Image 1 (cartoon, helix red, strand yellow):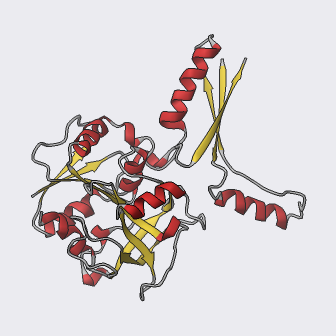
Image 2 (cartoon, one colour):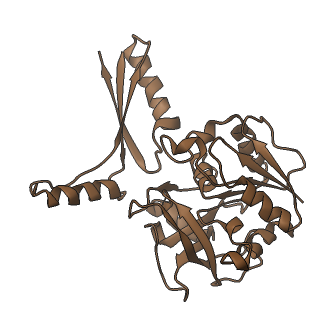
Image 3 (cartoon, one colour):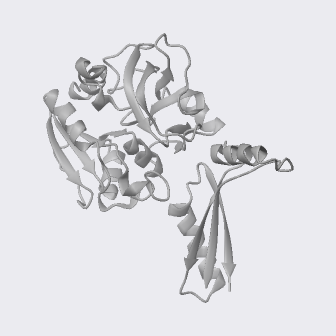
Length: 80
Length: 224
């Protein structure tokens, strides 16, 4: 199974990269963008058929390594 | 006095750090990250600067799982003195030995220059040879030096005198190079045994090379 983890800075933590990209989009005249957040995507290929077990394991991976929960939030998506 | 200096793949300040402590008369040892123990005669453990594991994922994130880190965490929990400089500070926050986290600099640029710092608290072994509000000149060289801590964490830092140093200009006025919360350049744990800072005291050991203000900082550890 494929598991997609998205990691972003928490709401309220200033995202300088997002801000810089937003400015660049402004200068390209995309004036309808109101906010930009830049994060990272980590794609895991797992030998696991049990959704629940995969979710538990990946949550642990996020807490221990993939995200720094002092500043970052994460989402986990299981893809069949 | 024995100073043990950690070396991960990508560490690049271990020899500067060794040279600095040697010049102050300390015995030194560089410890490769595969070691599963900290030498028992260690008086101070230094996590030196650099780019451990190429800063992959996040600065310091992979280093915290190196074999030696279990021993480092135990050494720190048992009251051993630990100093993290630059990438070492990032490793110590990632490992949960120091509060907060280091984000990408607000400007998104790598910053490498001398910067002034103000001594905020000196009731600890690290800065005891300096006075409160002293302004010192120490190089900074980092991409991820933007210290972040949430509001409650910040209150705790103030309540327990855990803020060591703040960025300032030569007159001691506020000057923030990287966007750090409340200009914070270095902090310690509640017990005042684990210290971390982004600036490099080991690069401020010779007036001829720009500043010798690091001498008084590192000397604090040698006079326990």
